[in-house]
Amino acid sequence: MLLTQFKIFDQTKRFTKPLASLNRIALDYDRNFFSFEFVAPDYENAASIQNAYKLEGLNEDWIACGARRYAGFTNVDPGEYVFRVKAANGDGVWSKDEASLRISIAPPFWRTWWFYAASLGTVFLAAYLLHTYRVHAAVKASLELERIKLLEREHVRGQIARDYHDEMGHKITKIGLFSELFKRNAHGIATEQKDHLDKVLEASQSLSLDARDFIWALNPEKDSLYEVCLHLQEFGNSLFEEAEVNFQALGLSEELLRLELDMEWKPHLTLLFKEAMNNALKHARWAF
Image (cartoon, rainbow, N blue to C red; front, side):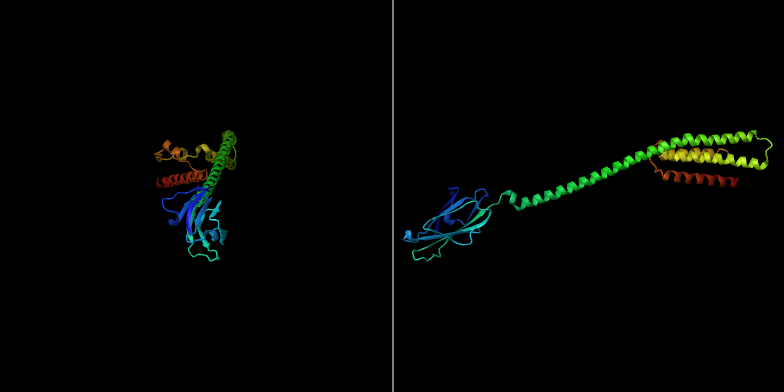
């Protein structure tokens, strides 16, 4: 058998070599309408020749086409195929001399492995970016919520500090003032009553100092290390004012305003240094 012509969409395909000498024809996915023409030159009685063909990969069985020397295929899926054709004489004896040709139809780019891999990669990348975006959005929302809570807390702290400063400070001052006036105008009172009055004055002064420290610690405007050092300087000046102790606060700079302290740390740090200064004054007195 000899293959004589190969057509695509009924248009004869020209090759650089005879069709019978080709081993393979490569086609694009959109050129999958093709046909073959063939002939059996070894038979003298052409009218009695019977032909059969099949496209392996598409047809499982041979297709008998009688004396017709034409085989056409339409809309063939991408893949690898082998076209085979054979002939039989008038006695029905099939020749072993078959003609065959491999046909390769390339898939469209969206059905290639690299497109599948790229698509899968794109899906994973999109999922990752979406997950990352959601995580960042959640973190951002959480941070924004914390910021709002912090601002609300600072506002409440400031309001409470102002209220306590106005109310508590005023009332404690009045207690101390009235106690001092009573002590000055009370003549001839018993020693025991005078001792009680002195304790009231001492307690009111101590309460005034404690209230002042409480209001100072509560004020969010005093949360820097600079304000803590300034507060301790004032405390030290007051503590060592009547003692023969040289007290100095060195290195106090407004650059310390950049160092923010947590509300819980500020009173602990203040109490620690106040205790240290009280102990220093106590031991200094013993030294004298």
